[in-house]
Image (tube, rainbow, N blue to C red; front, side, top):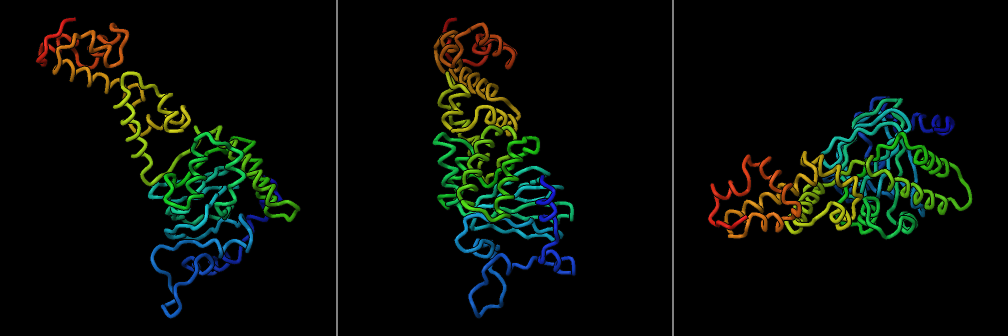
Length: 336
């Protein structure tokens, strides 16, 4: 990162100076509108950080140094937050998940993501981007209509309802074009120049176009995303076990093929092919036990055109051939 920019971001802010002098809790008055007059002056429930406290009037995006030296309790935002680490690291709990954000990494948070932040040290220098959802209009246009994680995240933020995607954590410290684009955003937001809004919106669009190419480097945080994802996977296999390819599932769900393959493996410990295989063999067992279809017809019915392969994997899993399994368990006595 440009040294001049870094030195400015590293400076102790007024808020941090108060903390270093002994303040034990975050001054929520900097972030949240006070509750109705006449009450005790506190805040009700979980703080919802308010863009009007952090954004200058008329602006759609603004940056501020990430506050160090203090624990920031659980909160939400009524804006989209993007956090970039210039140096060091920060420790977050987002929707109950541990997120360790390292140097050069990006964290996007939707409005309803519940975030908690542990104290950072002086060398842990980060930049918080406070962004109103409408800022993403140009970026959404630039990335096109094809479904992907970035588009799903932006659309969820624009709708302002519960976002399926709570956060996106991009581990892209080694991707130079992304580092350059983020630094360009920071520089433009720190310096006054003509057409700043257009430049920033276009740069954000370019950043998203780059990030789309690195879905293998993203951790996706969702309240119920993983459960819903696997329900979709199992539902697809249930309905298409005979000919359901991972590419078809990827297209139906709108996720990158490589990312989806890795996510399934991470969540289940099995590949998509192994899950599909399990369903096919389970269905073969059912048909062997409850129908008079021949063993060969059953193999074809569950998706195996190569019957030798079908016999081999059935034996590998159950220790006997399909015909032997039927003899021991089946009601039907279909022929080979």
